[in-house]
Structure formats: structure tokens, C-alpha cells
Amino acid sequence: MSLLVVGSIALDTIETPFGRADMVAGGSAVYISVAASYFTAPIRLVGVVGGDFPKSEIEFLESRGVDMAGLQTIKGGKTFHWSGRYHYDLNERDTLDTQLNVFETFNPVIPESYTKSRYVLLGNIDPVLQRNVIESMDKKPELVICDTMNFWIEGKRSELLETLKKVDVIIVNDSEARLLSAEPNLVKAARMIMKMGPRIVIIKKGEHGALLFTGDTIFSAPAFPLELIYDPTGAGDAFAGGFIGHLARTEDLCDENLKRAVIYGSVLASFSVAKFGIEGLKELSDIEILGRYRDFIGLSRFEE
Amino acid sequence: MSLLVVGSIALDTIETPFGRADMVAGGSAVYISVAASYFTAPIRLVGVVGGDFPKSEIEFLESRGVDMAGLQTIKGGKTFHWSGRYHYDLNERDTLDTQLNVFETFNPVIPESYTKSRYVLLGNIDPVLQRNVIESMDKKPELVICDTMNFWIEGKRSELLETLKKVDVIIVNDSEARLLSAEPNLVKAARMIMKMGPRIVIIKKGEHGALLFTGDTIFSAPAFPLELIYDPTGAGDAFAGGFIGHLARTEDLCDENLKRAVIYGSVLASFSVAKFGIEGLKELSDIEILGRYRDFIGLSRFEE
Image (cartoon, rainbow over all chains, first blue to last red; front, side, top):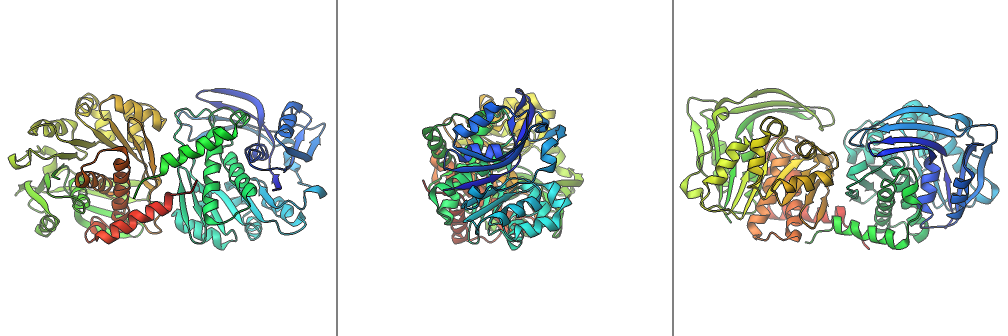
């Protein structure tokens, strides 16, 4: 079913111990849309780029079934640029450069054709803009999912708390969960975040997998133990895309299906990190995705 | 079946954000033996204490079916003492004091009655002493498991490598695995450690669970998401005790049973951290242990 994705679109320069990629397409809206495109259609993207964003990348997104009616192109402007270098163990990275460029004044305008989207995924942007998007919808969507980050948790806390009242699912990493709740224990942190609005809390733990919290359930998903991780950039967004993609495809929000969605998110994240930028998400087959899903069963199942 | 446990016996003073325990029984041999005692008998302990070690704790160990024939008591000496303070999030701790006392010259002497033990668990002690224990055995045991730590990996590397050649299972945490293998990727690290001798590698990741590597299998076990962790001291040893206890009880070293053993290890670790020192391991019932095992199934299972 229809999925609206709002987030950043970037040109990233990424250095890892295994190589370097220069000015490649990235940003949360891109990773999310591509990952979700293996599960559902239409995907409706809202974002902003400058005149320098490669036409080939837009064509690629269109080829994946992504509706680009919500793409704003600022002809004389430059696309949001992020440059970072990962440490040896890939768990830490230094930001070398951030140029917000056209993203600095990004105001997500939701085209009329998008306003009936049943699933909404709000990438990590200003919580005020996230709320504006929710309020632009024709009626309450089936599911609103949002990501956020330390910058907003610390810098726009009251705005973020207002937005969270309208959100069904929050996806954050462990340090963000701890910062948002002021509680180091992740189980307690999730319960406290639920009281802020979201009825479903997903805490990503990078190489350690993810935790899903609903009213009744805690589910622990492993990360896929890869021998080679080339580039962790976008893994969390690929996770979010696989997660919402599976839910939008199946239209089933029961706990058991939420667990499957978390695994599909982990599957897409595992493909994403195996190549630079979005390359790992570009040519997946249904058989590969299902095969990796089954690998996750083998990885985590044990007998009574 | 018979299990030999060699390791430290300590009087610990522990501070966490939730309280403090003064001079309570601890040390790897104690945590391992108590945890394993819920699964198998006899358990044969080898360790050293001073005259200050409480008789009540020895009686408690005996009440759990632990054979104390291998306990050396240095009447005029003092028991190994460790004092530490955990940080707010319990993931880090500062050692405030370490007094090796009688442990400094510990030489594990294996009583004749212990030399036919089929399972051997070598807690984190000098790798030379670990090797001496293995060589004291009447014949090659069914399974030799060892723990180690950064101190030995850095300080006695060549001795440790000699010992590892005689070891079937190594249990280390993620930073120890990375240090031992000089490889940040845990999958590769485990493969490299296998080449050093152990055919089974278990990497503990604290609140993130544990990974089991065998020739054919990678298994990812979650940690139990507890709302209250009072004291992480000894969690890794409780894990090792539950793991070896289940194997000694079932005498089955197939991959599926190794996975179950990892979960039983995680079960015992989850009980251990819920109270101070070994208190959490003192009065468990089979029903509680089986119930927590089933909770782990609920925590990690998802449908195809």
C-alpha cells in the first residue's frame, strides 16, 4: 500500500577502512525509499536537492517505483553534503564536513496526490517539519513512523515531544533512546518513550541488532554477522525502509507481523552495509531477500 | 556428569547505582560452580581462600553439591579482594581496589579424586596454570572450556596460545576477542581464534547477548531485557556455569544442544545480575530456570 517518505537527500563522501566513495547519493529519504521499494508501491518521496544531484540517481529511484512528484529541485542550489570517515572497527565515525545547502531551508510540501498515503515514514528532520507533514495528511494515516536524533532531542525537545504525540512508531538507536528518556536501562527507556506517544518503540543497536517494544511484547532481533562490512552509512534507514515496506505490503500490525518487519528491516540493513552508499540496495532479488530472512531464522532459532 | 571448576575465589565489595555489598563471596570459581550446580553433579572446585573466608559460604557451596576437596585454605592469609564501582549505565566500572593476597601465589593442585572429571571449566587465571590443570587430568576430558582476559592476552600471549591448543571452547567478551585476534570484525575474529585451537568460540556481549561460533554455525543469543540490573558482577561466569552445566547434564555436544547451552548460560546470567553478588543464584528452582528459558524463546522467536 501507499507509503510516504520524507527525509534528507544527500551527496555523501564516505571513507571507511575498505575504501572511499565520493559524492554518492544518500540521505534518509533515499535509503528508506530504495529499501522499501522491494516490498511495496507506490512510494512517494518528499525531499529537496540542488541542481547538482545526478539525473541518473533520480532515474534509478523512478525505476524502483518511487514517485518523485514531491521532489523539490533548487536549480541554482547545491544538494546537502555530508562527509565522514569511519574508524577501524566501523562503530565510530568522524564527520569531516556537513554542508546543509538547500536542505537548510527544506520545507516539505506534500503534493495533493500524496495526502491519502496510508503509511508515513518521517526520516530524521526537524520535528516541527515532521509534525507539519502529519498535519498535511488528508486523514490520520494507518501508521506514522519517525526517526530522530540527538540534535533534535537536545535542541528541540518540546517540539519533538509534541510531534511524538502524533507518532505510532519511533525508531531510534540506543543512545538516542537513553537521551530521550533520561534512563540508561533500555527496557525502562522504551516504556517511558511509549508514554510520550508512540505505541511501538524500536531501538536499534547497530552490530548488536534491534529491540522491538509493543504494549505486550519485547522482541530481540540479531544483526546479521557479516564478515565484511564496507560502509555502515544508511544502515538505520535501510532498516526503517525494510520495516515499513513489509508492513505496508502485508497491512498487518499484529505483534507477530511487527517482529517479521523488524527482521525484514535487519535484512535490508545487512545488504546495505555490504557495499558503499546505496549500492548494496540497488539490485536485490526477492530470492536474496527471502534467503537472508531464512538466514536470520537459522541465526536465532533454538529448540526447546 | 562430573565437572571440574578452577578459578578465583574472592571477597568482593561492589558499588552500583542501586546499592552496595561489602566483602561478599565472589570470584569466577564461585559464580561458575553455583550456576552449574542447578544442572549437574558432582562439581569439583579448585581454588584458594584465606582464613577470613566465611565458613557459611563454604557450607553454602557444599549445600549446592560442590565438592570442596580442592579448596586450599591459607589460615594466616587473606582472601583475594576486589572492589569496584559501576557507572550509572552499568556498562562501565572502575576498579577501586585489588588485593590478590593468597591468590597471588595460587597453584591449582588437582586432587586425585578430581582427575577423571569429564568436563573442565578453567576460569580466568594465568594461562600457564590453566595448562597445568589440563595436563593434570587422567586423560583428555570430554570438553575443556576456558575464559581469559586482556591482562593475559597482552601480558602472556605466547603462554595463552599454548594453552588454547588444548582447549575445546573459549568464552571471551567482544573486546577480548578483538584483542586476541587483532581483528575488529567479530565473525572474522572468531574464525581466527578457532585456528588457535578451540573448535567452539563464544563471544559475550554483555547487555547485547552472546554469539556462538562452531565449524558450521553462527548462533546469536539475546540478553534478557531486565528492567532492573542490580549488579553485573559475575554475569559472565554465571553464563559459563549455566553453559557447561547444561552440557554436562545432557552430554550432547551437537550444535543444537550447544545453542540450548548458550541460552541456559544467558538464563543464569539474567538471574545473577538481578541481585548483588551471588545472591541471585542462591535459591533458584527448576521451574524458574525453565520459565526464563521459555521467556528467551518468546524474546527471540519469529515466524516465517
